[in-house]
Length: 219
Image 1 (spheres, rainbow, N blue to C red):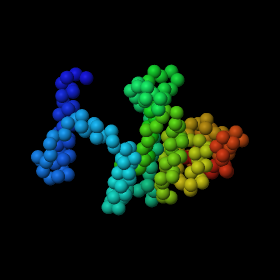
Image 2 (cartoon, rainbow, N blue to C red; image 1 turned 135 degrees about the vertical axis):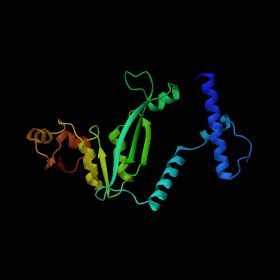
Image 3 (cartoon, rainbow, N blue to C red; image 1 turned 180 degrees about the horizontal axis):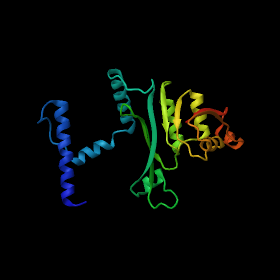
Image 4 (cartoon, helix red, strand yellow; image 1 turned 90 degrees about the vertical axis):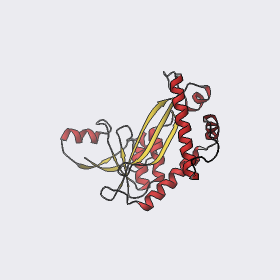
């Protein structure tokens, strides 16, 4: 980092801290200036769980005071994920892991987002080996009966669809044309929509502990 960049960053943090203490005390001159080093030391003591609880409290307060936008009566929740390169230190590499062929640790990000109201309901930063579908299935535990989950084509799996059926949650997912023979037939016929039953194979049933075939609307 260049000296000029370092100085600008230092002044930016100091300015934010001054504004923070002025806001909570109402006095622009309250207390001694807080150094960046002291701020970093204090920040390390903040548990990640505290940020989760604060976000939950903020969402609850907003939902009590603001009429949420809905589509056809549903709260529309999109699930998406990504990965990010992390500093290549032993501790970070040990926790997050290095994928084969990668020289640096990677983290997996995932988010459950209310697309109509701009609210992040749940968010995760986990080791790379954790699957996107696994994180998506956990989000169902924080959902409500009138939620509609949206999934891109990287998420569909019979066990995930079955979990929605067990939890009685609605979903809409893009699937690849080779996901199932019924999907291939639907694309080949050129119709706009159809009600079908997607029956998993015996292997998929064993791997996903699926209770019943998934009945869904193709469109």
